[in-house]
Image (cartoon, rainbow, N blue to C red; front, side, top):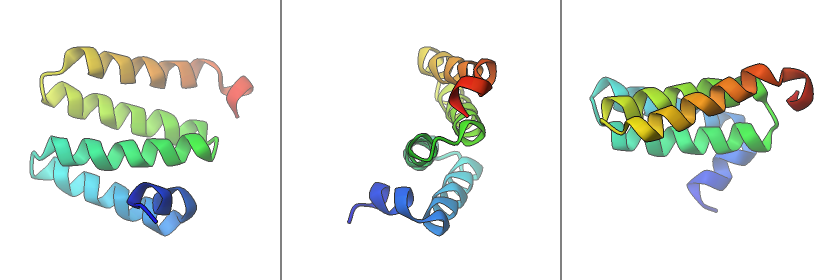
Length: 91
């Protein structure tokens, strides 16, 4: 079983991945944070949890902003905005 599939199936693994991402951000290891936040985002999408999708999209946006990848940051900020604008359709 891969790390991503474990995160998808287990809320404890999701929380651990989120904690690892936060630690990576604290250490300015944004490439690692992105890896963990992407796994969390995928899990949130599979669970159809709109608030979690928005949360992790914003976290990813912040990481990409710190990495100087403005286009990626904008894409994830837009994903968070779409989730915010369509709560009735997605939730």
